[in-house]
Image 1: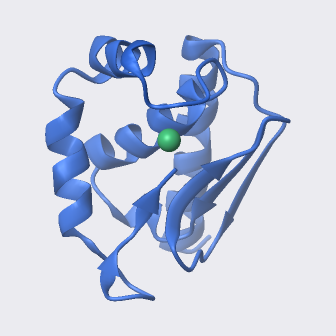
Image 2: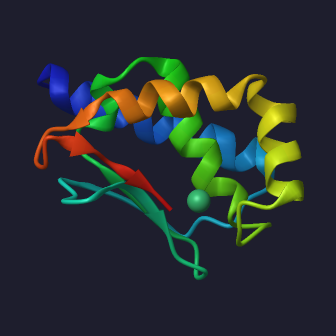
Length: 114
Ligand SMILES: [Zn+2]
């Protein structure tokens, strides 16, 4: 197996671990190059992650994973979502800032997170 495939599988394992811990609804995990976003979550539990994410540090991976999985419980970025982010990741705002500094490779601008 190539390093890329191993990293991709490890990333998916990480997502399933977090999904268990957060009791989030996940029906599928897809990884592909995304144009404008790092990740997306549909209300039916379909997760899509940008294929470059496994190359980032684990703290940033966790930020994106937990961000999306919490949308299983909270559809917005309001008070409840923020307190859950803090409970699971600590200083998540610092991670968010760090992620924004990483230019999304296909755009040369920071990728969005929804
Ligand atoms: Zn979001």
